Length: 316
Image (cartoon, rainbow, N blue to C red; front, side):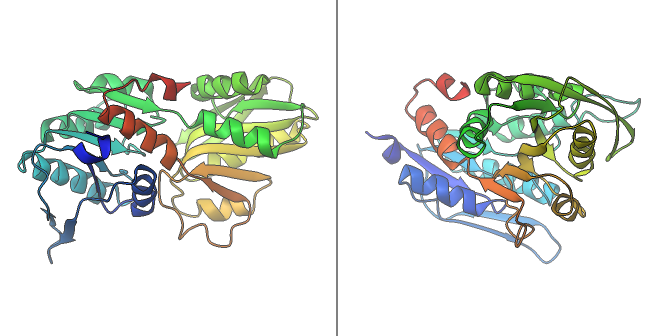
C-alpha cells in the first residue's frame, strides 16, 4: 500500500496556502474539514470524512492570532483522536510561544513547556516543526520531535543569487551563533557576531560587532523576524563598520506592528524568509522581501514518516 493510501493530511486555517502546496507535492487531497467559530468566539471542528485507522498529519502554524490557531490545533487533534485515527502527527511550521522557553525573570511562565504539554495531552503522537527558536524545546515533549532546518534552502539560494567569494555569515546576537555557523559551513565562509543587548522586550541595542566585516557582503541569519528592530539595527551596525551590503535570511516572518515598513525603508539589500507563516497580505508591493517555500521539505518529511523511513537526511 502506498503512503498516499494509508495517510491523510488535514489543515487548519493558519496557513492554507502552504498546506495546499504540501498536498500538491504529495498528490494527496486535504481532509474535508469544517472549522468555524460560534458567535461568542468558540472554535468548532468537524471532520467530514471517515479517517478511522489512518495516519493523519495536521498542518497548522501557531502564528497570529496565536491563541486562536493554537486552540484550533488542539481541537483538531481531539477531533481526530475521537474519530479513531491510527496516529496523529502535528506539522507546526512555526511553533509559537517558543521564545518563552525559560524563566528570564522570577514569577513568569515557561509557555513553551505548557504548549508542549497541551499538544501531547490532546493526543498528538509526533511533532514536525521548522527551526525551533530554542533546540531544547524538543525535550519538553514526551513524544518524537523532528526539528527541520531551512539552512540548506537558504544556502542554495545564496549560491544561486550572490556571485561573490567575499561573503561572511553574521549572527545577529550570541544566541544565533550556531545557526550562522551552520550556514557559513555550507557556504565555506567565515563568521561574525553582532553583540547586542535588550533594554526592554521587543527593543535591541547593538553594542559591538565581533569579526571583520569591512568590504564584505554580510549574510545575517536568524530564525524569527518579529518587530524588525534587531535585524535593521544589526544591518546598520555592519554597514557602519564597512560592509558593502547586507542580506538577511530568516525562517519565520512574524512581522508584527510596522516591521515590514521598517525593513522596506532600511538599508537591507534583500530579506529572504520562508512561507512557514502566511504573510502574503503584508508583503504586497515590498520589493526587498522574498519568500521561499518549505513545502517540498515538509512534504518529504511527511512522506518519510508515513513510510516509516529515516528523516535524518533532511537535517543535513
